[in-house]
Image 1 (cartoon, helix red, strand yellow):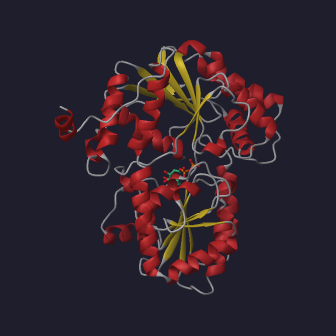
Image 2 (tube, protein in one colour):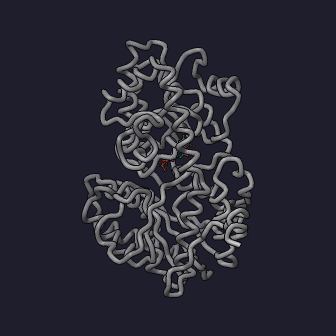
Image 3 (cartoon, rainbow, N blue to C red):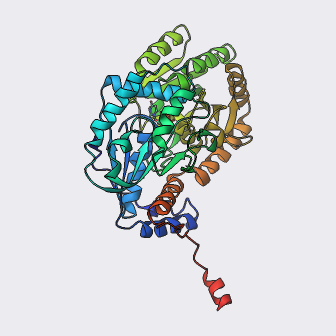
Length: 429
Ligand code: UDP
């Protein structure tokens, strides 16, 4: 286990013009309730994927509120990460070949990492299946343990879910992105639902002057004079990159000018990435204007901003921060009709949900021909993100849970109440 140092500090002051003041007031109140406590987030990678993206921005907000929060990252070897990626796939419903030996590997690495949990935390929040057995091996490292799932467990492999839920059952609470992700076997456990969120102030989410954004995409081979569509994703079968290429191929005869930017990276804890990348390269052969662009982080922003449409054609998706990021830039998203993407894209808001390659191509075709609709959908999508999917809302949900767990003393902890306004105070004397 190693600690991510220099997580930084970010004041909520920056959000004053973006969010409801009651949300910011509640955060200040919650910070007072949690004063002096120390919490830790534990996950499996400091780079690549949505969880790392969130923690990089969430920790500084905790620090800005004066709360002692740490971020710890598991250590593991290739066999461990092969097992945990298989677990991830099984829990998202893939055919599952996990053996007892695989679960032993999982347990052994969790035991090893648990030995590094020396401090006694008030609460530890464990993300996803990789560290799910930590509590087994270090039950006294925290007063309260929370398991936070980011994956789509709406239809998991039953055997894998049974093994995992037996571990999770020992936690004090479990958190999912959607209610339907909380599977059976968690009876009696406190369950919360918290969709993820983005940081509008990180470089990738800051909207640029258009000429600058176009100059950046041009640097990566996109012709800025011609339209392009984009998908940004780890190379993962669940993100359906092959479906994206097929969707583009169907459009190409009618749109010879159209380009496809496929931006992708590899997460440290995802050994399948290279295999999928090779398949994408082969699939793209013979189709002109497919640009496979590796390893961008901040610079995904200009692609999301300047695309005619952004795709997130996932087959399963816990949430899909890439869709949130695109919507924040006012770009419509065509998303797989699955998981957390359904929270973000709805009828008339943000774009369209699709169930097949054909539908994907039809919807892109429609948006390429209907500029006004494109703009209306994009603007509604941005407002939806502002209201629902910016980090302070997630921080509030998480701090409410921590307050309830840590300050309850056998009774429900008191909730925040908005302060009475001056006018009300005068009326009530
Ligand atoms: N990402 C990136 N560069 C890439 C691919 C992805 O910076 O080439 C980022 C993306 O912008 C998003 C995160 O990785 O912030 C992916 O999160 P998401 O929830 O969409 O998917 P996950 O990888 O967690 O399944």
